Length: 200
Image (cartoon, rainbow, N blue to C red):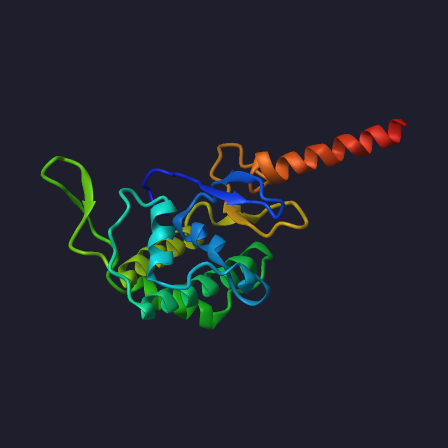
């Protein structure tokens, strides 16, 4: 998994309320940009600027200044959809779709973003990173997550109407919600209402 500092993402609920969501891994941050089938309506990766904006919001530190082609945006969408199907299968205990694994492995085999130490002693990225290098970095992160010690902690939010996927890296390993301030809070409110109606 990517070891750079976690930022977490600011998402908006269907009612427009902003909340923080930290999926715990770079590859899972990509899944909030859209997806296959019914998730296509959430698509935000339409052009190079959209992918650059996602990289800025991601946990990559520092934000890479990328040169991205239209073809690389298409490639990133294909990688994301493959990741989405593989992680969904994983959380349901189903076999990983072979063609999607091939898509992930092909992306992971390409050169990724290369960190270097600047003269100032700060971290930066070598050269002028491309969209293909960004995709390789995301794919490698997914390989490490799916084959690493937290693979059994990749979960879907426990709320029935939420499909956000995260990895629980907490020590107790009891995380149930995408975000306590969103789905966790909704659950608390529903439980409180149910208790009041039983008492009434």
